[in-house]
Length: 336
Image (cartoon, rainbow, N blue to C red; front, side):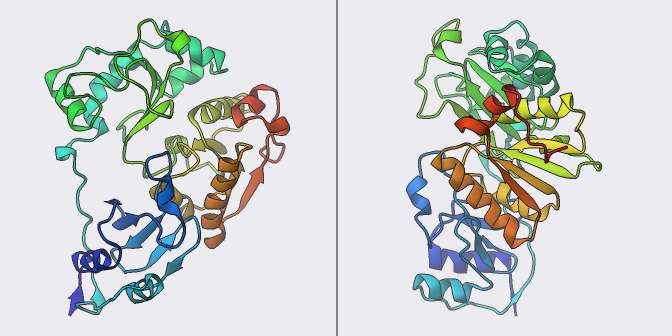
């Protein structure tokens, strides 16, 4: 008899309980049972453990806990395991929810934000951070306001995605909007403007972090600029690191041989780590000089070592963040 993906998922749930999500590549994602992964829940932490619903193999991209069968997983966590069948057949992953909406359905609102950028407080803040208008336009950045000019259909999509509250408040109000990729957007990353750049106060409270993300992060952000000529990928944590890093590559005429991408924080999603594992480039990790940056390096290099990918870890001088180091004139000579 054949064991389907649905059978495997049912067995995994008996061992680990309900999954956090199922990826488009048909992995069930969990907090890792082998290290204190779940302690990051509710912060910017991302789960790092997944089970392949096509084969039953499992892997934690952070601590390296892995195996080839659900039997070994059950044994490792002290659970019972009695599979229904013995062979595997591949099934399509379950579709994403949000009532069929994804961030591409708010393209009209994104276009409205992009049209407002050049004379906005967002552009003033970008300039202060060293981002040129050329870079901002190339990456399709926008300035989001509380009441964009949009259709009723777009407003419905925004509500279903959690971008608009029941009361009609846009949760990207007074932020820099980055849509990735620029066309056929899959991820919406917003960076809230500091208070001194606001023309009017927001009508909601910001959370712990000055940024939010909507969408399916299946690849590092910025990877849409990769071309067949690309041989090296520069990896950084944040949006401004990526924007200024891309400027440096352009100024040195190193693009498209090298492309700068970012992981959207110090805890990359399972899918982003899987992307690094599956793509063969020369990788250059430029880390933030804090403990989170050290953990970020360990998480990504664990994946790269497993797949025997080539990588180099680089340290900005004087404890600077990557974007600050780039703007100071520092550039690693190995990337040339």
